[in-house]
Length: 414
Image 1 (cartoon, one colour):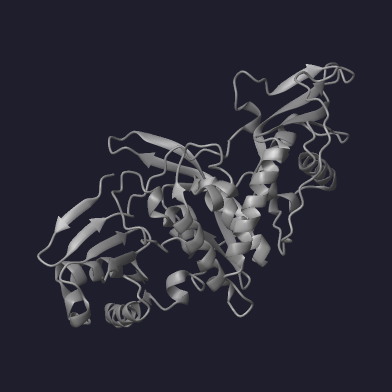
Image 2 (cartoon, rainbow, N blue to C red; image 1 turned 90 degrees about the horizontal axis):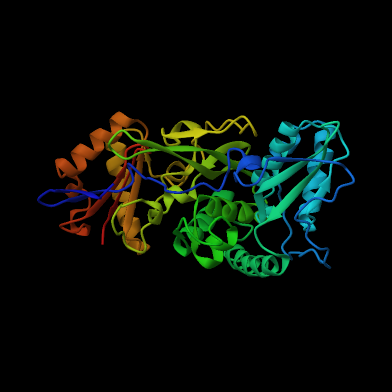
């Protein structure tokens, strides 16, 4: 979507966020056991037969980070029965030690084992180096599952480098927080650090990793989400990775599907969605150039009903918690949420003055209903009433960005 500009005598309006599109964001496979047609999803073999493609054993020392997790989230794991948890744990331990073949001693159906493997790929954030391609091995006579053969994206020497560099960046970001801050304040720092340090990229060796988002500066949605998850875990903020399918239209009625990953975060007992990818202007496809300091908060701690209407949330593998509150939303929490047009004008006056005091060039506001959003957009910009608010502090032309789905407006005052 090309940026749409409508000329007004004193206002320049730029449509940016209302049709944010993602391309090739497909790190989360719908069926990881069948991701490559050249690799069968299971191998019929005798238990005594060595699995083909065996990797020679080498000495391996598990990399240990120095920043302990203060929180870990395993919601899918909690839904498993005792036998399934044992299988889950054995695969996780094997992956931590770069084991190729994990023996399965418990009886389990192949399809259920595939679900557990996919659950691990999504849920175990520290195992981002684990490929979503694997092979299930079954006994040739009984058909019983005997093992799962894992694949890895990087060898352990490369992984040690990725983890070390990522940890250094995580420590740097955490140092900008302190115990006097609320969780929302900390999340704002995490959100901003990721966005200002990263651009959306679909190609690259590390785009699906926290290293890609935090160090390399190039990531797709999985990298953004995993980076936020690491920071939350280290800061003790409860969270989980959420997945779904984004449906995109090319304007000619052709719809494409792309897998998407974002974060769900728990604040004061209530769950919210956080989509750092969608808040990064660099993720906008054909959206035109934006200033380097531009950043959005349209998807900062939002309820489920404010997720994009073109996103289908996946619930079959891990049932996500209900997210219905607005209490910790960026705009509500920081006082930029309007429930009437008169309130919007008061908020904007306060925000404009704050922008000059804090040397922030952007003013942002969110509206409680679509009708109020449309009313305010019309009066403020089409009727030019924006220039009656702090008239001596506003430029004669301003860039105006809107997100109709999120009911948010953002404009530059400098």
